[in-house]
Amino acid sequence: MTTLLEVRNLRKHYPIRKGFFSKQVGAVKAVDGITLSVEQGETLAVVGESGCGKSTTGRAILRLIEPTDGEIRFGGTDVRALNPEQLRRFRTDMQMVFQDPYASLDPRWTVQRILEEPLRTHGSAPAGELKSRVEQLMEVVGLSPYQAHRYPHEFSGGQRQRVGIARALALNPKFIVCDEPVSALDVSIQAQVLNLMQDLQEQYGLTYMFISHDLSVVKFISDRVAVMYLGRIVELARTKELFAKPLHPYTQALMSAVPVPNPGMKKERIVLTGDVPNPETPPSGCAFHPRCPYALDRCRTETPELREVDAGHQAACHLL
Ligand code: ADP
Ligand code: MG
Image (cartoon, rainbow, N blue to C red; front, side):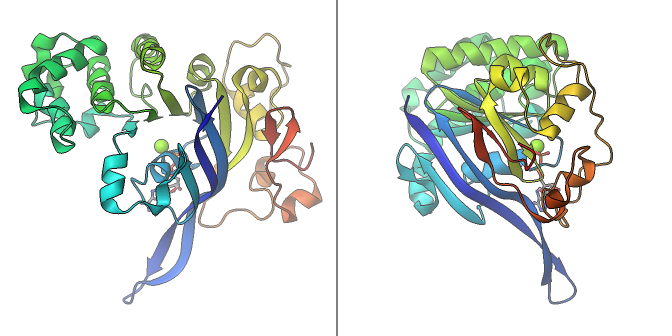
């Protein structure tokens, strides 16, 4: 396998400013040192509770927001070293699908215009071919080309997300960050859109980073899973392995909180007590220790590093 994307020690801190002179008084450590790689053609899921930094990670990798620190290599290119013009051209390879297609699609534009726009700005289709290229994109995502003159509000939620996917595909990308792409959809529609995404992946050899808080979706779609907690990865493994043998107490808690069909897993329930802590003032040591039923003294003072515990199975926990 070839590695398409390599991320090392990625950080995104948002400054907190107060007072007349906007003096910086602290920082929200939304992403605080993420290291991962994504193989060509695979789906890496990023999972965790709301606010743990999943979207920030995805956006920082695409430089839709500027990272504070860290390294991003995509097919050998140092993404952080690209100047604005190089980045603009590079964007054709890396696209994003958003959770809420209603918010991410301009309501005043027809689907024709929405799908033409990336083709025009990147000059990747001659004017005479725009119409046929849009028709083709619509067919690829299971929409009828005769719907091209319609506006986003004239579609159902599932169809709107198909438009969002078509827009992401317009420039023949290699890599797509999918940020909760089915979370806003009815459960009955979710499977259809997930199946479409899998078909497209096979057909076009796409690589996905799939962000979700929903473990059953993750189990269905991904090859590997990274579990995030408060801006860091606490566990990373192949999907089968992670669901059969979750090692980190946080992963175990997430899995026992959600009824995921999983006959192999122990029935012991770990209840997550308390809220996700505030990333402005993360707990000392292991950020999970205030909610961890097994916390030791060491967990309060020393931050555990993500390390390989079993072959291809990484976790950040002093207990392992
Ligand atoms: P997730 O996608 O996992 O729900 P996010 O990446 O959206 O999490 O957010 C991670 C943390 O960063 C949250 O605490 C959020 O409030 C904070 N955050 C996100 N965007 C900003 C911003 N523009 N300014 C300040 N804090 C932000
Ligand atoms: Mg998010």
